[in-house]
Image 1 (spheres, one colour):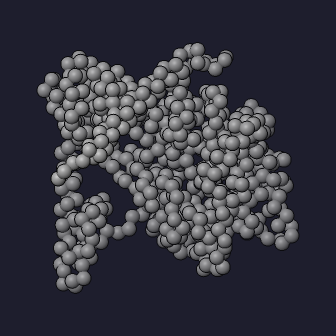
Image 2 (cartoon, rainbow, N blue to C red):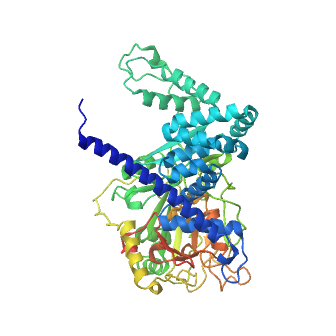
Image 3 (cartoon, rainbow, N blue to C red):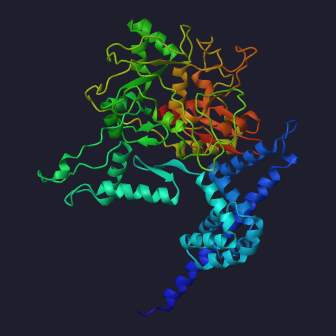
Length: 582
């Protein structure tokens, strides 16, 4: 086949653009390292503050993440690559020249982690040459071979150390899907994949499922102790038809959605804690096969007026006027612990911003499990939702208002909970309501950014005193630790850590007082109410406590995050009304 001059030119252009991209990635990492080094010296400390090098580094990473509109984890990963490149100068030079891609640099860093400086000095040039010519996969194999031949004893020690890094991770994927990844030894991985293949082969060749679908079904069957699959073919005489079907799992999950969606009156998405948004049909399907409970908020003044005008009980009035966040327990709930709680107990982590360090406990309350300093996203867990009980039926709602309610009039929001509803408790759809027309988060944030650029002073907290509009402290407001219902409402509203770019699930975050709670005089400080609480992961809470970042809650529970560098970030809650975003 003839190759034209134009095609040769295009091929050369592709190579030139790739080299420029590689060199730009090297330059980005170099600038990141320079910024972090500069911010981690004492001169960068805030006036009058105690300098803490570790906290300064974490704040510098957070500052870079906000500048790049990315996550803390992503910037931290680039920083680790910078340190790895310092150990292999020949590789670093080739990267800077554009001869090695960022992906190959990641492979080199991963396969040389823990290698001695002496070994890397001997192999640096050889690795750089291999990186220029080999694809990422073969490059990793070649580096392993070089290190083993250079020092077999070290290689054995490295393997033993790597075996201690076995872990399970979950990663979000769009359209209601997720990825479960397991890091095993080579022998364990081979054994598991062989077992999955054997179970998948227990159906006949007429089963209509694809190989991937059969492997997924085999994996789920193995987790429930089965060693075969029931065949889905149309042959009634197929012997595999009698294989037992795995029983549906009994788990508990937290899903938030508007009551109008749950009742089929509207098609707004639901929100699955630790994952993200679900389509309305999937949300309603889960409610039909699960017990669920509603958390409702309503302005106190509105509730008092409705009660006087109609004589309705406070809970039914709230259900009419307030918004409802449904707390849904997934399939066949039997009062088991939440899935996120089980994840913490067994070391199963989800994909999000990484937490680092331990909280000093200042101005925070957390019912989540402990965090660690792992490189990947680490989530503990804690189920803040009300525990399910015997379903009394929808006609007997709980009449008792919880923390955040008061007999005193005022504009503050009160929070109520319904009774636990049995599976299938859904009202028949009536007239379809028009969509509320929510403004997109990007549109809202862009509008606020324009206002910040014009006049930062006009962006002010809705309740700068931390009292949420209440004229008198409601029950529980002067208690440092929020009760379970209030904690559940905060987590359902926020969905994740409220710092920009952080996706640590709310269940794994600490509940932080935005305006500090004054234990010596609680009346004067910020109160423990919905409008003065937010979810922050351990890392970002530590940076707030250190005074390096400030948080204000604007109208509609929009968080405004800023620092003394002049950076501004904005995050929206996962549950919002159209009026909140205009």
